[in-house]
Image (cartoon, rainbow, N blue to C red; front, side, top):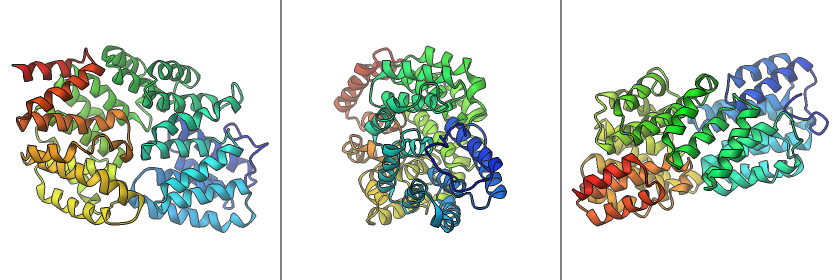
Length: 438
């Protein structure tokens, strides 16, 4: 195998062609290119006793944050457990980690993946799973440090080294080491030009440092390496953020229509990007036409999922943006019940998901003072809801706009001062300040 070292990791399942399908799935997962699930189905069809093929399929389904896929993932994992009697301790730990994740015990899953990595630093499956878990849980230092603990033990020139660099670059960026992230991210892309996560990490750096011209060039000159990836919608969203800073609304909406909102798509990660972009445009005062309506329709079936609070907040953006306050209030009811549960998602919903969703609804209903009151205490806690700095920035932008509309000029100025201290040349922030001062 190319991505898992067969000398240190024993796979239950002996058919060589099945192992080839499995290796292909691992590579597709790490690079965010292609359909790893199709490869895993081929591996399972070839060797029905291939334990890790079941485990990896359940993992990918679980990390999607798609509640409807949890049942399929659990069913897949049950087949894996039937074969766990003769499994190695390494495989048994992988089963336990995925099982914990699917139960909503996210922190427990991360602990098991870390345990695997202590013994097997080059286990790219555990590294990917833990890294994505850290991202979804807002564990910023672990995005960096979990990878850093492994890098010295990764064989130079190995098949996994470039992918580890890509993950490390994203961790460095989220921890504010932009120079380091840029260097490592570019090296990762040189090693694996189709590594969409590494391309995306560099795009994050250029957005956070307000190098919008360089960011646009970075993405457009590499469009062939990411446009066909499973991160294509999200990377296009980053390109749209560069255009937002220039207030080029026509280009933003063109990207929305051509690359971000695929009308037939119900993939939650794509719906997140669509909501996040349209809500920013609402906050900026740009006209988005009737685009909210179909997006709200796509989110409506997810109202009762209550699986991941970050998704719920973006569903509320769609309902509030579309003026579907009935749907927004239905969602609030679900979040109130979720917040009363003793689960990890319940705790995040209680602290962040519910008040942010209430604030978004208040903002859309012109109850701006209430939105300010709800958002003010939450934004410093928002990291616990997951996502990146760039994604969570929508909360601060909403707070800023609500404060301005509520006539709280001193607060608005203070928030703009904060933003301009970090990005003094931001066209969007400078325009906002000029408007405020006139």
